[in-house]
Image 1 (cartoon, rainbow, N blue to C red):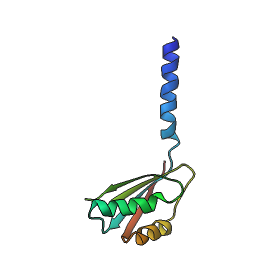
Image 2 (image 1 turned 90 degrees about the horizontal axis):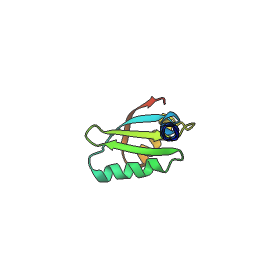
Image 3 (image 1 turned 60 degrees about the vertical axis):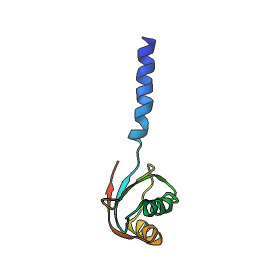
Length: 97
């Protein structure tokens, strides 16, 4: 019985971060062609307070930015960061948690 209770508690703890996930932003970026490009834009985006992860798909020109719960960014914010990194932001979509 004790093992079952511990197992249920551990499952609850593991699932909590996924329930408290923040917003995901999907950015279509022109100019991403190599790993160095990806690293440059990833570094720039991760400097923004609240950004948890940045995943880049070079083939699709997509940058997926996951932010902490309660944090939000505007398209203008991402446009400036992407422009400063030397790329062009084509579109941004937001996926609520």
